[in-house]
Image 1 (cartoon, rainbow, N blue to C red):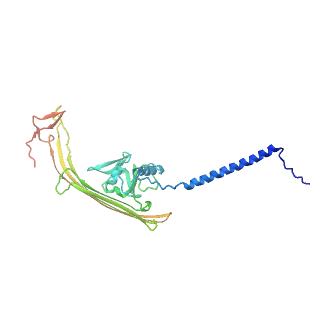
Image 2 (cartoon, rainbow, N blue to C red; image 1 turned 135 degrees about the vertical axis):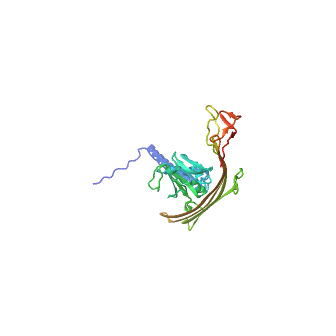
Image 3 (cartoon, one colour; image 1 turned 30 degrees about the horizontal axis):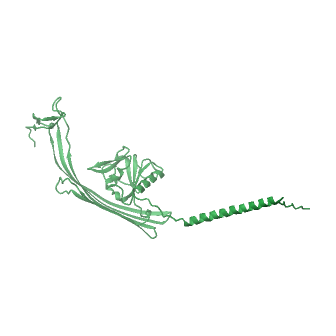
Length: 344
C-alpha cells in the first residue's frame, strides 16, 4: 500500500503573508533583470560602429620596424618606409647609415659600402628579395650607392645566422625588400623630382656643377586583387667638385728647428655621377596558399671623373730653405726655397 505524503499547510495567517511576500519579491527581481537586459540590448543597438583607425606617417614607420624586430627569431635591425617610395636618402646606402650598428664608408662625399659592427665590407653580403647580389668593384664589398632608395619598402639586417638565408655574411646579411603590389591595400603612386646645384664652380672643362634627380613608383591590383603590377624608375645626375691637397710629410729643418712641408700634391677633381634604374614586378596570387612573384631590375651606374693638378717636392729635394721664414707654433707655414737642380 502506497501512502501519499501530506501537504504542509500554513500554520496561521502570518505564514501565508510571508509566502505571498516572497513570491512577489522573486517576481520583482525577475522583472528587474529582464529590464536590465532589455536596456543593455538597446544601448548596444544604439552604439555606433567605428571605422578602422589607420596609423600612417613616421609613427607607422617606427611601428612596422619594431614589429619586424619583435617577431623575428633572429637578432635583426630593420627600417620600414613610412609611405611608398619614402625611405630616407638618395641611395639605399644613405638609409643603411641611419641604422644602429652599421657604419658607411664614403667615396667622393657619398656613402657607398657598409661595415657591420666594425667588420669591413667584405665580411657582409647583400640580398634583394632574398637573392644574393654581386659586387661591381674589385672586392667582395657590395656598392650600395647603385640601388635607389625609392625602390625598397623595407630593409632588414640580420646580425645572426638564419638557415633559410642564402649566402650569409660573417658580420651580417643585408636584405633589401622591394614593394609587393598585392601587399598594398589599394593603388599607390609616388613621384619625386629634384634639382641640384653646386655653389663651387666647376674645376675641369666639360663638367657641369648642376644636376637633377627624378624617381617614381606605381603599383596597382587587378582581377579581384589576384594580380598586381609595380613599376619604378630612377634617373639621377649628381655633380661633385673637390679641391684636394695632400702634403708628403713634415720634416724638421734641423735638430730642434721648425717643421716644414716636405712635398705637396694639389689636385682639383670634377666628378659626375649618373644612374638610370628601372624596376618591374608582377605578382600573382590565385589563392591564399599560392603566390608567384617576378621582379626585374635594370641599373646603369656610371661615374666620370677628371683630375687636374700638380705634384712637387719641397724640402725633400735639392731645394734649400732660405732665411726669413716665419714660424708659428713650431711650424713654418710660409717659406722660400731655391734649388740649382735642373728638372727634365
